[in-house]
Image (cartoon, rainbow, N blue to C red):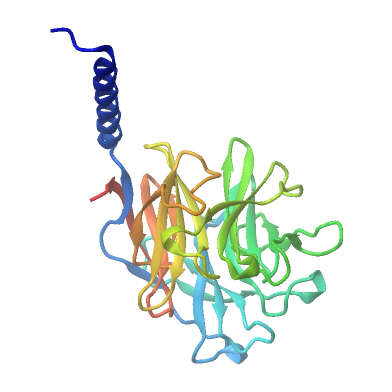
Length: 319
């Protein structure tokens, strides 16, 4: 008996839908997983006249300097420094895998003469580009840039108005936590801010580090929330093996830290008001991902907020 045409079409549609579902389900979703034990590289530093018992090393950057040593700069908050109490402190290690790197002293303080908020330095990020090192950082209300050639000392890049601030989401929005990725000769600058106390991750792009595109929101809301601290410390990592970009986005510091992880083929979209790219969470805050000699590492804050630790990282099928 011949099946009616409308039933044939319905059956074909169901078969096609089933095939699409099976194809989608067959794709292995790789998620970042800590691989082994952490080792501590930095602790609670002696700041001299600025030391206070409640001070905390928080957002940080790790990179290799021109002489081969490893550098770590952290924003220390809750110090006795004037203004917003924050400054940058530096540690140095001979090897990335060494424990307890050598404390090197205060590395940088905000300079109101260049338009920076007193005591407002936040979250450095350093990348090497050609023969120089680029340090992006926050001054409480702006994203700023400093340059250096040895990977240890940096000079502020000033804008035409003589100030260090390159971009902002508005005064009072606490524009901060920059990190930068070079994609096809274009700098992708990610950062967080909270206009109207709504925390989101933003992106600006540039070819020359002076002229930046208008900002666009790349991650907001969803399970991670919309609070002022729901999208902190954005870090985007390109996983070459899979061709995906992974966004690490922190919600909580301290005893119960949490960072949400998103996976997208498009580095300009990790989900706004939805979780379609969410692959999970990790119990760590302010993660930074480092590739070195064929191994991937993750650096995060200690749950006590009294130091920084590093471990190996792998990308494995999501449980």
